[in-house]
Length: 283
Image 1: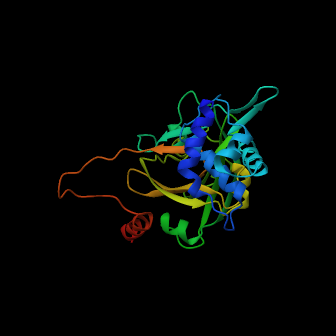
Image 2: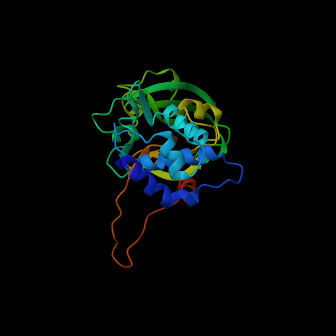
Image 3: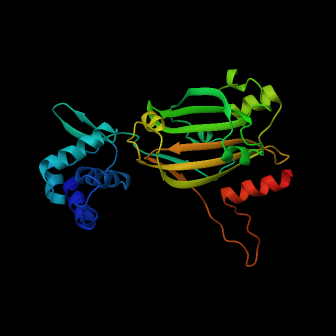
């Protein structure tokens, strides 16, 4: 038996319990998610041959059409590619890793230098602040804000959508500005004399509840995502930007934890606690 089939058979025996014939999740989709995890766990490397549909069906004790549809899902999402006359292979660069705890202020700065990262402006507009944003930026409810949405892609594959809200009164006509060197924070510094000194971020396992974001990321509506919420502060501890980033599958973050001395103070705060503390400071 080939190595890829051995690995698949062993993986299937350890994970076959995960497949369930109970609704509402289609059987093929459950199998697709397991095969996706099979690749994510590095049982196969980029350019390795992917097991044939017959081998998948046998390993997981499913029908050939179910195995075929799950494989098609992997192909459609860029996990695999087919070469005429040769077979199906694991796609190159199928995984992106970021270091979450770094000195970089923006997420895009944390991508490796050899990654071909592109940014596309989806919209730049003025709007009225919803309650969450108003609280985060210490604005009155319904105050005017600038809303920015950008799509980040690697090698033409979308990986995240970034939404940023800023007070319109503090940054007049920002929605009409061309960013300095493509950087929002650089634009705030150069055009508005506002320097971002630190950013705080919170990660949450979520689902994509927006059809527009799902379409931009090329994933199904209600697909699992990583939601990254953030606040950007000046050196005077003034919150000047409220951010939400929707990260699709195949992106991971690395963080480092360190032990504290017994009885030492802890500064970790939830997003809600941070917003409430900032509100109290401004009163």
